Image 1 (spheres, rainbow, N blue to C red):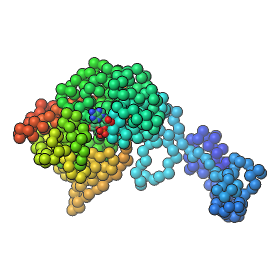
Image 2: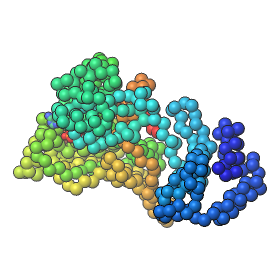
Image 3: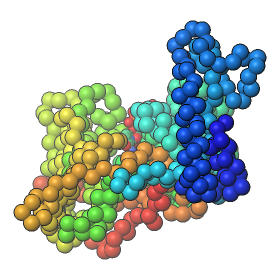
Length: 478
Ligand code: NAD
């Protein structure tokens, strides 16, 4: 160990690790530090360089004669001085919810790093039972638990014993916590499960939420909440009666870019918003999939992906539409769209003359963006509804210049953020930000859009006064 590090360690020990490198240099005296550094440098120059690639040791001492704590065996077999490992000064709060503050090294010129994560110890996290082991669960939700701070997977429900066995092994879930759909209600007796996450075809949400509520566990349900307003109302009532929380998995409302646009809209960054253009389109090909069966999906592109344009517009504006007009199309003869719509294009009137114009399609290359047009500028979020890859651009004028900016902020795992929000609501007994009422309102609006498209006329919605009336308190975002 060099004199510099010995001195630094002594100072750190005496100062209870509260001293910075700058303080250390001041305390030790710049002259001393400089002479120590010079001495160390000279010693390095005197030593021949160790060759890691060489098969025979060219420097160092035979292993038997060296202190193992100050040397290590290099790739070539030679004993070389160990790195001078120290812990730089850091603040380590005893409170688990407060982040460790590491020694800073970046200037204010670059964007600030977020605080270090503050995961809860596993035994304090909320345990989830995942119901349905399809694309979303296997591709996004189970991997997202790795980024969670308050949530962990503890049980699985599936109709496939093979999937259950394999996924349970992959994610360390006990075989006794794997259930068939017939055994679903037995989740009641599993004390490790505090929350049930419903990830089934849309038509099954109502039944599994209502049965789930009877187990006494809190329920997180995928979007769309259900296939009808009536089902949504029954789901809300069942959760109220069982005194369990119900949240709809609107991940966009927990995603930083969408939240930033929401703040810019609400703060009138470019003046009042006049209209929003929104688009969510993708291509599907499997005629046998539940998404193409009306009884299971409830509808086509609108409830599956068009819902993002609808829910996100409501989230950005905070107000509710008063009237909708829809135009629907399915290519004649295409078996994919025999039961459900291929395309829905619709407009929503919001208070103060704000118009949202949206389109969703099941037979085009994927395209997921929106543009908020305000008096003095616009905000464009490409990949706005995607799992990742959001790109935010803004445009406004400054004198003779048209300023177009690309804004980059830290991304998150939306699914982890959404699950951790629900866990926090359970741990701190709070109302979720996107409760059942939020899903019910979307369902009301979708039913009005279908009615309008069928009847070829605008359909009015009951007026709703106030802002964010169907949402719970703001989530804490970390
Ligand atoms: P999927 O078809 O990949 O998975 C559905 C699961 O349900 C499968 O494991 C399947 O075995 C099971 N299942 C049980 N009974 C079934 C039945 N009768 N028919 C078909 N499957 C049955 O679907 P997915 O893409 O994982 O979607 C599941 C839910 O998640 C849907 O409500 C969907 O809208 C929602 N979703 C949300 C997002 C999001 O970003 N929040 C993304 C994709 C899907």
